[in-house]
Image 1 (cartoon, rainbow, N blue to C red):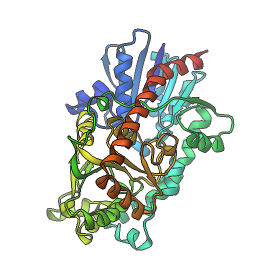
Image 2: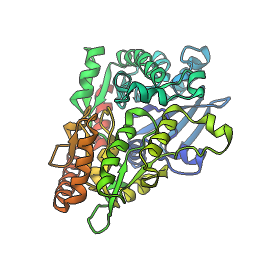
Image 3: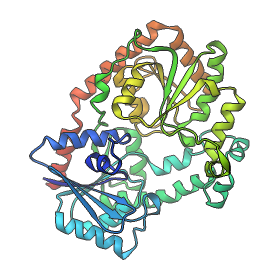
Length: 420
């Protein structure tokens, strides 16, 4: 069985070779690659886009990587003759049994599916562009949106409202991809509902999100955790809700002045010189000013990009984890946190409530109600019993889910079904 994967980023051995370190994003893909390496019955061909002059290839056992020349991301020219030529050559050479697109967010899937002919294809649903576009402003007021604007944003058409428009425009080719592939893999009814609207005849396959085994190795405990410490998901654009979390943090700080929020991902740019000042985007500028206005500079730290092991360790040392997004399909980071067992607070959005159960394994709140978010954090700071109860149930539920649903086996069975 040979499967061709279309991915939006460097993965596996290719990521290691190009950057000198393991991937820190898309950890479910890394887990899938690790499983495939041990499976003699499968070959995986992984294709991504890079800013290079010629096609590059890398072999790693039964995993083969191709990098195709082109602009990375949404600016990829999927209509160009060269793009068609590259994809056609790879598909004709490899002759895959199935093509899987890991996400529908980028346009390179369009040309790949055009060249695939009768090869069955399936899309693993990650973010849904239409929903991201719909909720992109994430509760920001008109005044806040104006504050979150820089000269760079205006010159390049990258204001917050401009980016919202981009997502809504790109949702058109997302719809085209789904209608071409005719198959999707989802793990919740919420995502199914979105895609059945744009493609009523789409075939729906069910498979839960895979969580890296590294998150099973670090377990949260009251003895290990640092009191009054918070951790959240990476938060470099409005939809992840950091601006709302900072408003909640002010309320928490009134009661717990030593509260500390750790944010994984790239830190805010240091404004040394005019160059760096003009390079910052509007949301980055807004978060910086919000931390200053709310007097939170000493209560917030950026950790830098973390590997799975580093992420799991940081989670295990936190008093609680917050997922504060305005919309999520499944939130892999929340699932990772629940696997570690850190007590979690999460916004009631997208497919999250289908596994995060309020007052049972997580505390849920409506995204806009940052006051409720603040009180949920305070509850976890104050109640050791509540924290331990949520932690134990979350670890149990995640463990039970893994035992019942082997992500790799289910996906392989879907491949076999598509081939038949």
